[in-house]
Image 1 (cartoon, rainbow, N blue to C red):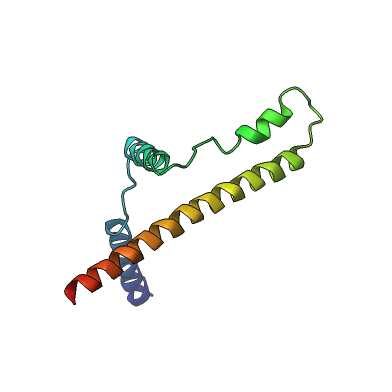
Image 2 (image 1 turned 60 degrees about the vertical axis):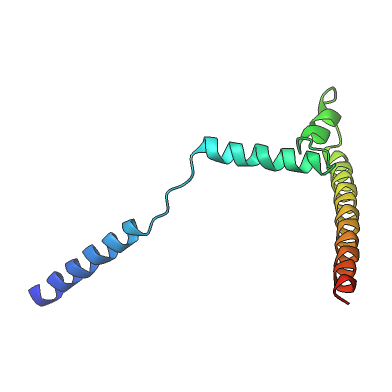
Length: 110
């Protein structure tokens, strides 16, 4: 019986050591908040509007306890879809400009 217990303890100890050595430490909350703020500022600089996601849902339900929250959620989803379309349009315009710049570079070599 001792022949089975000792190797099992050794294997468990090695496994536990490797587990704790390979754990990643999480970033502090301040670092995460700084990254989020930087991303929001970058999005605002690109022309996107940053609004809290629950703002539209809560505005519909403020005065009425029987508010139609699913309808407000659909409205918020439609607004998010519009925002995504605007971002896609901006991205496609930027890609077109990059393609035109690349063509100009190619013609400069000739």
